[in-house]
Length: 317
Image (cartoon, rainbow, N blue to C red; front, side, top):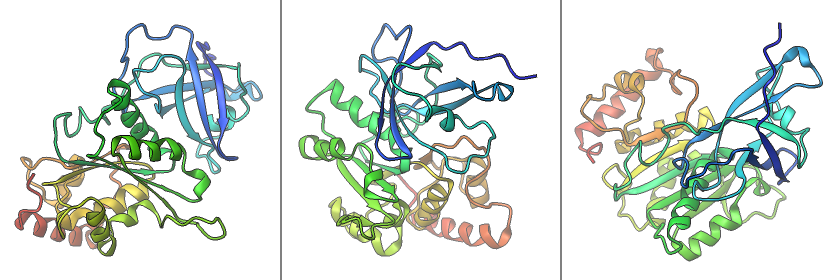
């Protein structure tokens, strides 16, 4: 028996297609929050739709990071990619892409999640906050930047570093806005494109995790005016949102610099002392570690590298 249909409680006010597979969805709840801010930047809401074309499949709900600022009036913005190879026979994005302005939708009126500055490093932390995004993983970080300037148009964003990796230049959602925040508020924003051929792209090339390859870390340090070898937990923290591969590869690249992931089983596998604070955080709905901690041939060399960084004092904040 199909589950009970969702009762729609919001309206898709505006859909902006950036590419065939990327869109902004601006959704207005029937009962908007009466107080501002109504959530913490980095949190998500649950969106849902009924499958009217195949009612036997019922409804589907998915968590989506909020891109608009919690101080904003009006619709709530979500930055969403159409999933080409869904794992479900009833994928939410395939239903979303049939929707047009004015259509009804379900949106849970309460935001949730702890992938926030407050719940990770803390609002008062003075270090660089390096925000690593793959694709639509930039949404919570766009929210963070927007919220800061909504609260104070002259907010100093020079301690925020947003690295955004996509396949094509057209996939760099919010690029103009983020570039403008660099000019007006000091935000460090760099987009990188993994498939630049024949696009006219002249910026950074490669996947976003490649910023942390040994050969490229020196360039990132120069851009941030850090000394050689200075990209360590003493001066920076890292937050990642995106593909599993992006998260896992970034963790592996930064082991030698002493960055400690905020994942209990991964910490234990790497031999991290319980008292050593986490300095690398990531948004993940799957509870399985993003690196293979069960295969000795994989985890043993990583543990050696982590232990060497700890012994050298690089993991100290």
